[in-house]
Image (cartoon, rainbow, N blue to C red; front, side, top):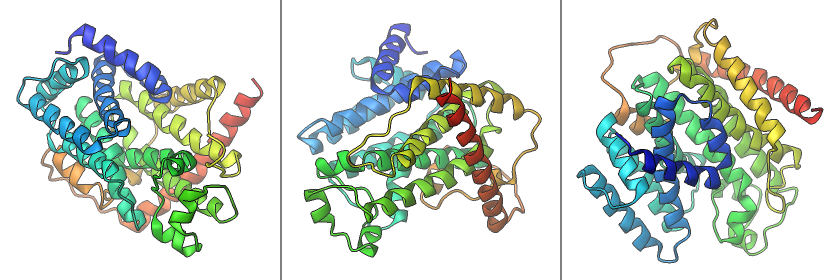
Length: 346
């Protein structure tokens, strides 16, 4: 069981380090919210430890040792480590999930770049979808289909983060956009990093990544109704708040280089209200066939690690699931436009 003082420390870390996640977590029930905050605090602090240190290889090695101590049941005397060790014990957290996160952070430490969208998805699987899978474990959901959709949400959120931070990353000599996309538009990566600025050629890159994120957001919604009822509003809110960042990028003309997309309090309140409504509606809404879509190839190893053995089979074809995803995407776009419009007139 997590010590209350450790939870207080984790809550403070998230409140100051990730306002969007803190807002979304407010709709989770206490039995889930506390371990989720502890999980996110460990993951966020691990990311910061690598991102903010000059000796990145040493930082990754330190994280590996910390994770080793956690699974040995003797965490370091740090609130986040103690809380995460309690999670590992209470929920039998599969070790492959935090190890995937650590692998992604090691790729960051190496300054790794990604040639294709698939390679970028592999990175997003490690640094974000792994967290989604771990959150499912904390909700005591080990169904393969629900896990696959949670991983979709994680990848979508990471794509949104990458789109938002194109300029900031470039100024730190980091580049996450698929290199083959740049080559298609005759953009030299090194020239772009030397002098990042918005142009008619960078706009399609950001738009394209956000379009992929939106498709995954639509896919992820089918999995939310497979979660415990009292958890659905919190996950819906995470989906809408992070997708809302993409909406602000679009409103900024896809300039993610000189402008940073920000969402306001009124918008967050609107999304929280929409999330509560969607959660209530999910009780009476028939289950979407998108739930049974295969996991992304890049996240399948996470689903395998977290899932309980299952003999269920489904006959839904990938093409049918894709068609329903596109319909859901169009429906969500209309709903998001309505919420943003309502928020502006408050």
